[in-house]
Image (cartoon, rainbow, N blue to C red; front, side, top):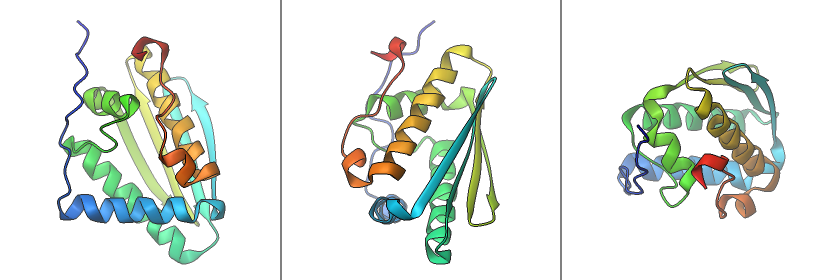
Length: 149
């Protein structure tokens, strides 16, 4: 049975949200200093995001830790964006693991639900947009799978 999309999933401006938002804004501001590469795998993606500036690497690593916690707790972000709403709606069917690597983070997102692979790939496309365009990409709606349109 299809899950209904809910557009109010833990939205708020609590202290942790403000910290997460500050890290995200710093990454958008410094987007030209980031490099992101992705490999599509059978059930998801493996992406690596790096920077040469050690201070920015720390911001990136803190951001990933914060997003992993938010995702695990169902504390939505970008609740105005249908792609992110769907990611949080289906969070129990998506596995996220990450590890710090030299100069950045490697993240793996996978699912056993074939339908959600496209969702993961659209999320990855969105993150590439953030890295490539910064605030310009941050202000627009993400691409989304055909089944979400």
